[in-house]
Image (tube, rainbow, N blue to C red; front, side):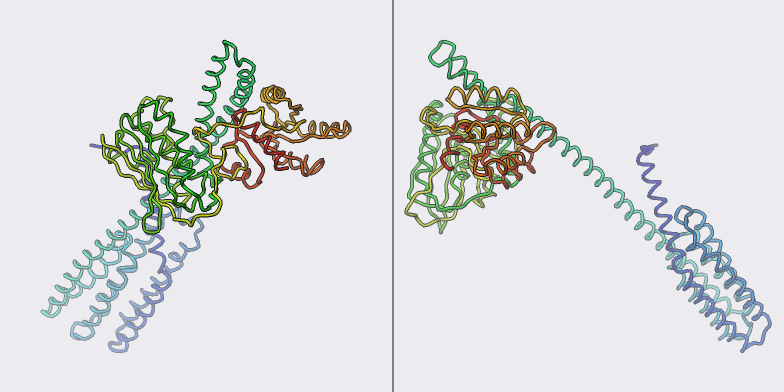
Length: 610
């Protein structure tokens, strides 16, 4: 014998109670109209039979029926009961008892009004009771006790009265009424079962929908909590890593040429690997948040493919692979930075999973489109994994999560960029033979000037260059060749970051003043004006102490002291809503941890644009 779990039993009991409430409501829904029809039928039958028979028993039955009508207020009280839904058991019992009284009154009609020798009137009585039973059955079918109370007394009274008269005609009529009674029971039972099961099914679905909604709400809350946790953890991790990167850059510069310089170099390599991992996750947040918007232009593929060759030639050579990129004079309509990132991810993935042979990248025109293909002779991808590889953090051959193999987000970003650019991506692969990725782009007409690929320095939060992802880059411009603004005011509540920024910029000849809140920044601006040494640039963190908004603080400071002051926002935020707000602001932004060279180049660009 099996028993239901307590939770399931509670759910079933609740559903049964809801079914009972619905059944009772259905039973009492037609009380008013049914009573009126019953009164009209009874008075019509009484008047007809009294006119034909002049029998006082007719008047007696009409009087009995009148007493039955006096029961109407007790039934109509259901609609005035403010807690009728909570008293469904009481009203269900009240209904079948009222139906029993009603049916007994009509069951008495054949005994009080049926003439022994008048077949037409006898037949009329049979038709009235059978018709009344048939038309009233659907109204009481919701509850089986009400069906029995409604059907059985009136038909039993009719059959017994017919048998009492004893003629062959009456016996035949009694037989047919008995057959009709059995058929009515069967129909009533079927109706009751159908209605009850439909109500149970309805409420079970509603209960299931409520449970699913509750589970979805719980899941959404957990997801929101997880998102907030990761956003907070990411921000908190980026803060010290940003300081480490800046201090490391200073240390690397100071130890250049010394024996300990190798240790500084290895330290910075580790910092860059960690920063690249955080940047990759940030890229996912930006793409999902809609922060990155493509800027479509006619782009020549030849310089882009040449840049990819420069990025990955040494990496392919280290693995003993051939990397061939067939240059072409074709032009396409695309966002050059986003397309370069997409292709770089594909090439990097191909090199990573190819152990011998090589990687081929080519482009060709086909029916007004341009197909760019990345083909490798690597391990291939089994059919069951061809969708999974586009999922974030999924790696086929890295169950131990070896960090040297990356995070497994490269192809996930590829698919997002493909959808964002509306460049369909196709995958064909054979295990142990190789893989082909085909990207389809719109063909564009050649332009007089080539749209170049940017150098990777972040310019604005909405530009494609905000997708860093740790891809190999062309050699950066030496910091000694950069013209940097000075003096600079830094508004950041993190003391370590202030110290690290001061150490880095001071080593490059920049005077830096560090303040931790807006009021101190106002004092610094005022003092700089008094000393006739205005600040050449403002650097501000997005999230300041006590929840202060660095972006708004910077806007207020510029409006008060110098609306044209070059301004750079530095942040470790990964929240999609805040990223969107940063993008909408249109200000230049760098995301922590910031490489020292990227910071210096961006500062140099600020005064160049100013």
